[in-house]
Amino acid sequence: MARSLARKAEGPSRPALGPPAGNPGGESAELAEVRAQLRELQETIEAIRTGGVDSLIVGSPGHEQVYALATADRSYRLIVEAMNEGAATVSTRGVILDANPRLGSMTGQNASELIGTPVFDLIPAAHRPAFARLLDVGAGHSARGEVDLTGSVGTAVPVLLAVSGFDLDGMLLRCLVLTDLTAQRAAESQVRALSAELEARVKQRTAELEWSNKNLQAFTYSVAHDLSTPLRGLSGFSELLLEEYGELLGETGRDYAGRIQAASERMATVIDDLLRLAQVSRADLNLVPVDLSAEAVAIAAGLRSRDPGRRVSFVIQDGVWVTADRILIRAVLENLVENAWKFTVRCDDATIEFGTTTTDDEATVCCYVRDNGAGFDPAYVDKLFQPFQRLHTADEFPGTGTGIGLVSVRRIIERHGGRTWAQGAVDGGATFYFTLGAKDTP
Image 1: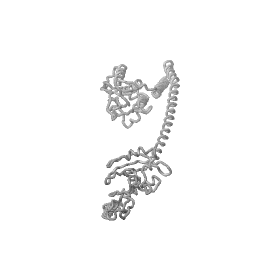
Image 2: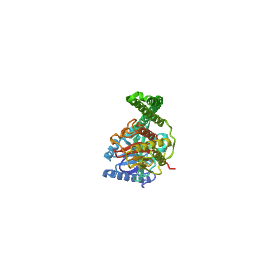
Image 3: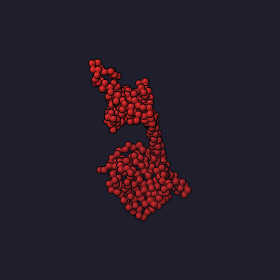
Image 4: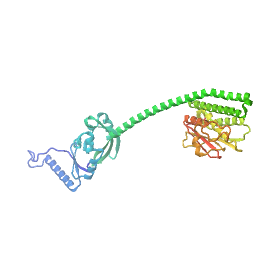
């Protein structure tokens, strides 16, 4: 951790200072070695005095010790000692030369106790191979990875290890920075537990919602089915009453009977629409490639044959293929095109258009049905897809439905994973859009 380790020395045993026996007048090899060591010590002392050296590494390979001046790199050491991460300098042979207090607290030891010990002693046996690979970096290189430290009382401390190698006067040292991941792991575990709990709750709520929907659909179907028979009887008897006893009823009585018949027929239509909506919600999807262009052409031909006096121009884009349930997607087009047919009845140059437009998602097909008819007030656009909500009365446009058709359109498209919306203006026509989550080609 010192800035400059300019002197490396072996710890020699103290030599005899006198000349060896048998050579009283000459300088022995041992004496020459002592003189050389004294010169080196003098040079080292001079380097320390002049600021050229601030620390020493002393010891044989594998047993190095670092000795640093009290004033050497004081600001740097204060920073290292105050770090929230553990830090250590490791010799080439894996001996800890220096360690900060945080590393000591992570391992349950004093930092001074770590100096001079093998760094592999800090790592559980199972993690030592991975630790060795991270530690094997050369000067100027670095590595990062996750390992465990052996904490106090044999506990494992997960850490993020960053290793940097550097050359110091020909000696390869490695600097280790270890970030404690214990709090992060605990938070991740808590998030996983909360996610699992949330997922379980969502599944439970989804199951409850599906159960409620099935009950509601069954109830709707049962009520509609049970009411249809008496309503048809009411309509039939009202008709017979008018035919056989109309003269006896008088004008007022005939009016009452006619209203009863019209109301019962209207109610029967509502029930039929509810039954169809229930069937839409319950029917299984059979997804196949469908040519929507061909379906639109067939629907247009059917409308012209039922009302040959109408002059309506159809503009239908070719080659619009989607993957959908053929029966249900046909119902979508029928509802939208028949609506356009109905609300262009007052137009001399009525035009109904079917085509596609671009979307942000290339995997989504966005189709539309556009007309230049009566349109609607944009302020009430949200009512269009709600049951029994109508923006035009039967007096304005004969044959106006019950408000179930667009609800069915939205339900079908949602079951296909798409969405629906509309744009329009009063006397400015209307455009209905729907998207499908996949497209295909024949």
